[in-house]
Image (cartoon, rainbow, N blue to C red; front, side):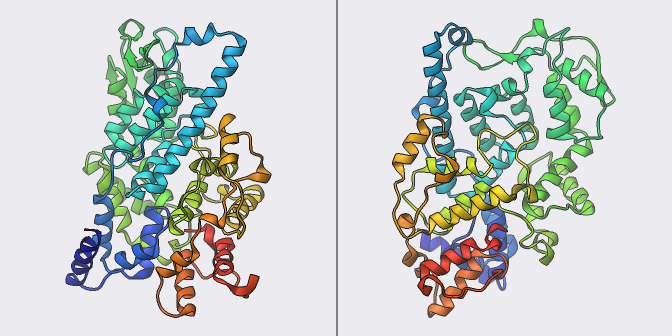
Length: 483
């Protein structure tokens, strides 16, 4: 069936003229996914840009395919039960919570490694860094799991629906202190971040708007036993409020609708999408054009993303190799591109943490920094160490290391033992079998597959000049960090 589909897509590309070519296909797949394989590029190179983008968008998912840990369905202990624990019971509970958090990270990495729709996971990660919550404060791994499921469900759906759902998400309610927001004692945390980081951006609202919006969200809280979202009418401020020029007895949903009606919201989200997929410096005229598409579709995400991925700016020469891979992209992309199998996914979670992207635990409400902020002397050394270990010839212990790390939420392994990844799970012959021609031709193809630009240093034939040495040289080249 897979071969038949490939033939059909090839026929469609030929029927509509020449395909987009190898370079455009590589650029599209590297930006919309994690990293392309040689066989994926062979297929997509035959398609037009429009066919390729439509194929990627039509294949997106709304649910994870990897089964989660069994405990995600377990109820969280009520707060009063935790407060009544003895010191020893509390220590055991904390250790168990850390272990579950580490398993949750490993589960998501496994989904990213195995998914048939890399774009789905890229967008789930994008929204995780937009609507930020963290295990460090939320504490309940079950709540963070539910939020992850929510973000994936709407990852390429409707932004307005996602915004309304996030406002009621239990992890968000805990993270931004909505449960303590009540009539007469408004907590402004959610209202402030809602405007500054989720919708409008700085400069498009006033302090009074924040205060009035906080009043509108009073009563949005959680059931103390089940941790499900619950609205408490007796805690809600029913008085008149004015937010961004609209007055009335506004509640939380009214405020969200007010924010969605602002042109600044569409431009703010599109600007972040531009930085995620195109370049660090958004083009103002293009942002306005794409924001218009976003609003005209009533905030459907696929139409604006399709327009962005088909724009001239996306394929412009100056925007190639203009973005730096995030730690997650580097780890998952390398594993998928080289068909690295059998590695304990907990080690990816550990490596991501060491490189500064600890999924389910962004550093603060602004999320992980992007662009050049991803690279410093420590992270660059860590990235180089990971690439070296992946293609190291000798076998090193793996699962024992992950077991030890899991016992303490990933903290048992120090930086010196970071990401014990090794060549025992990399089949170099399989990698080169996807390429064609003589050895020189295959190496030239490997270089184009792995790097967005020519390598900064040519291969000198060191380490015997074999295939492993050649691949290691490319993976250690600074250009490999770009997309």
